[in-house]
Length: 114
Length: 113
Image (cartoon, rainbow over all chains, first blue to last red; front, side):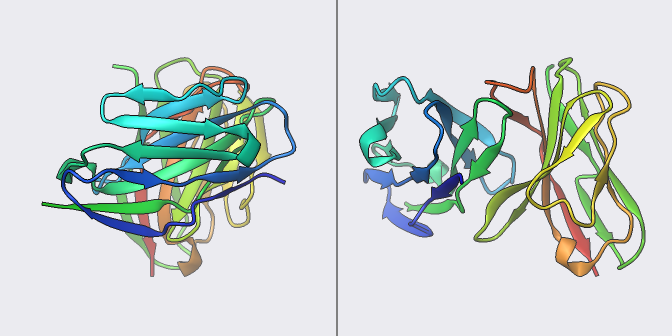
């Protein structure tokens, strides 16, 4: 069975702090995709990153970075020097390659205070 | 502009009154799907469609119907809405059914009284 766990329900930080959002997944598939989406207060889902299970290289995009560790089934997301505009709910998701079956975590609500 | 659109964006209705939420994409995508988002549960798939006239149940299909008569549209039908269907609904599409990133619509907030 596929499952995604985001153990942190809510996180609150002060602007400029670094923050890491945890994501742990379960799957029997050997190949799959992992995603992070951002949902700002306006409600839409904003795609942040897709990572193929073949590629364990960490990725950095501006203040965002992702640490994928297949050995621990984790795909953590770090925001460096957080800003108020980073306040949102962040979802981690796992997708099977054969049929687009996508499982989301429950989400982590990040609040960045000025 | 490439996009997935949903209508209406907000809807308040009463128990038992049939409603349809439309979803349309202009990207010629084969795959479309519907999700509902509930607090503490993330997004759960309701139905998906691999192509025209091909639909299948997701994780939480009870109380919903869909149809895929043309490639661009994938309406979600609630024949007899109930309060437990109060939720935020997202439509998504991707070019094909496999190995593709899904693009999400803006969401529809539904309140069933």
